[in-house]
Length: 279
Image (cartoon, rainbow, N blue to C red):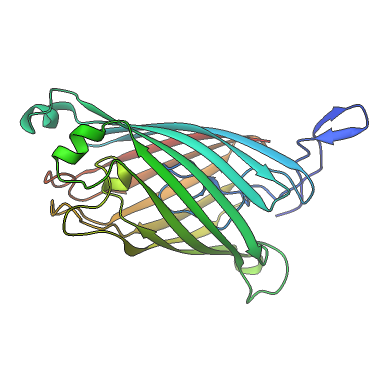
């Protein structure tokens, strides 16, 4: 890989949105709106800005499963490659399962996520090989279906996840490694509320491994554990992904996802497609 130029938007003598990061080192967008992989949060700061700059990105994501559908979209602000702020909306379509559960054919759960992430040490690309980029963060999630998720057994309609992430790109090996610890009580990421009468916060793990095929293309795998507070037999999630930067600003990610059992409905495997525009 080689460094990109710092072309941006110039207002007077100030270069706004100057993008100097190596391609793909700002990550793509997770289903919850932060930078990372499709399923796992990374220590990366979204946007293509360098230190002292401002970055922006927007995403749209779709997951198609045999019995459910997921749509998410949102925007992200990166400040000085140090602080990331994000907001995302996710819609979870229950299709025929909604009728079986007695909540209505095609009932759609809605979730808002407000995220913040702070880089506290290291660098994804530069610096000592042994020191990854490390970031702490939080995601406050709010279900728009409070009465229903409580009826399903959740104790609350909103909750906050806390994360600690470490990410490193080993340039010589073209290998990206990420690990995240998430302290959460979210049921299905929060779509089914938070906690239950008998269960609350748990520490969960999110891991990613990516191999860079070229300056613009990456393939990899992710794994994410999840709590089963409602006792519905919810499984951990995994994906096999491929990401390609069509331009310096536009990135597409496609993946095969295995989300296991969701709300007692097993074998939820399907496709993931996401588009991200970043400056």
